[in-house]
Image (cartoon, rainbow, N blue to C red; front, side, top):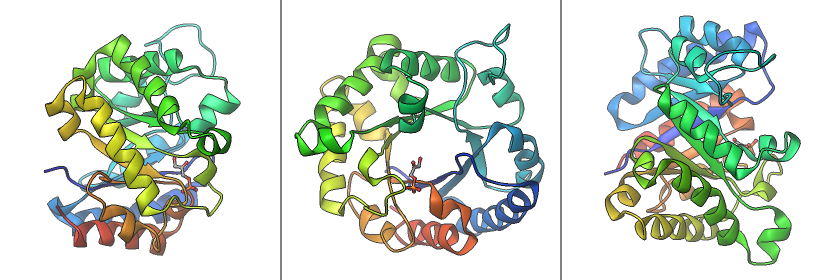
Length: 255
Ligand code: 13P
């Protein structure tokens, strides 16, 4: 059975003070959840050392919001997966729509990031999802398949044995327009069916998170859906009561 995973993505937010407050609270919530749910925070790279120190000895996992494709070298401003791993990260988000959009990252480039993360012992969290125009045109699965296929082509389907997928419709991110549980489940089940055409066991095992205005109010109905295995949470992961409540929802629905 797939465990529910509640993962925060802080994006470009935080100060030393808020990192300290949030990580202390979320480490306690992760410990309270025990083995009933998995909890993680993906933080801006500059705060990861601080997160490492604060999360030490707790069940709270953490990760980066991105990573470079290189291990080291003359790539000013980048963070390599090897560096991220050295600071105790479990996860690395790759292909977030904000990076695909603002930084013009193609699906092929995202696949290289996925591979680099995995080659360095990190669990990649592959973000996929369509724009509002694609949603309106009924192209949701075309976009999701193209973004998944780039990784399958480069890394093979078995790579998803040790990865997480986050379906994040771009129209739902930071807009307050959460996808309805029916819409989200419809896409999640189609993503799983698509993966099944390559390998049924891998498709059955991989956690598929929902992201996009997922909050304390919307998480319960979303997490009840059979193919939704938790959430990738932006805004609500910056607030102690909201994110803690989402963790408690996951515990109460523990599969
Ligand atoms: P919001 O939860 O703020 O909509 O952000 C979702 C997201 O992009 C998580 O990666």
